[in-house]
Length: 58
Image (cartoon, rainbow, N blue to C red; front, side):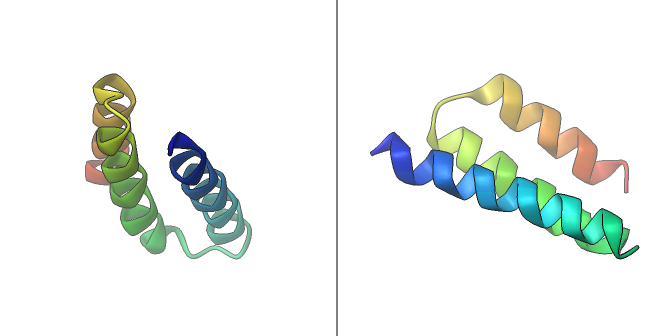
C-alpha cells in the first residue's frame, strides 16, 4: 500500500540530508530521481515534477 511508498520517501529524504552533510551533493541527483519515481507511483505528479526539476538542477 501507500505505507511502503511513504517509507521510501522518508528514507530518501534521510539520504538527502546525509549526502548534503558529508558534501556529496552529486549523489542528490539520484536521490531526487528516485523520489520522483515514488511520487509518480503514488499518483502525486506535482511532487514528482518538483523532484525531477531538482535533479536536473544538479
